Amino acid sequence: MNIKHSFLFILTFLLLSTTACKTKKGIATSTEGKLTAESVQKRLIKNQLNAEWLVGRAKVSINGGGFAQSGTAELRMRKDSVIWMSVRKFGFEGARALITKDSVFLLDKLNRRYAAEDLSFLSKEYNLPASFSTLQAMLLGNPIFLGMGEMQLEEGDAQLRLSNESNGRKSNYVVQTEEYRLEQMIFEDTAEKQTLTNTYEGYSTLADGQNFSYIRTIDVDSPSTGELGLRLEFTKIDINIPTSIRFEIPPQYTRMK
Figure 1 (cartoon, one colour):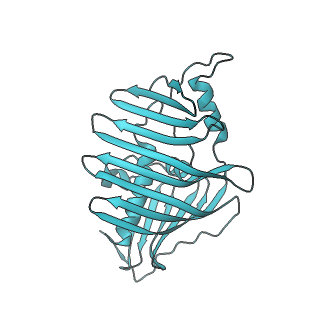
Figure 2: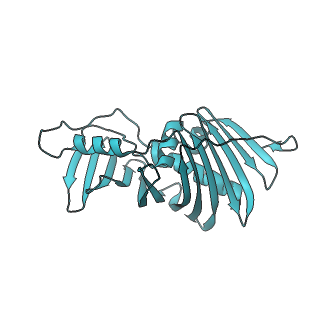
């Protein structure tokens, strides 16, 4: 698998991990003086990262399907506007992408080719829903609530678990009790025999006091993909510092079909 395919793999699973099973939102009713699913969900929303700009670097590794790849990724994002990504291998840039609210552009710099598609191409290519807002939330490390009916709450010694189930689709959110940090999001579709597990680790406080998960793992198990794993380990993060975002398609590049 070359770096172009690796980049598409990364982009696909970032989207996959945040867009499965979207339905109408529903949460449990709060009871005064008692911990409820609603109060836990509100704390998660209150603690989510807010940033107008995000700039970072990450180590990336992918395993599964008979292959393994690793490299480094650079990210620049402006809230509700644009996401820019670049992937390098052995110090050489292999792929660059620009994602807007309705389009995806990709440069395969190794083979001097490019792709320009509307965002729905990810749905057509991989049979997945695609949303700029969900990809943005994933990069920020924020929870995506898929509310499929009333949520249930289970309390443990060090963790809380929010869960719901409807029509063979299950959602689980594992929350750390002390600071209400999101530790896992697990989505299961029993009809499609597909499970997606997102794990958030390595939390650290940013300069403005907000918490950020520096280590993310995404594990996928489905009949079409088998078992696949993606790990992102951020090595640098800056927020709310405006930066330039440039993306040009060289005239000598040919369009991918």
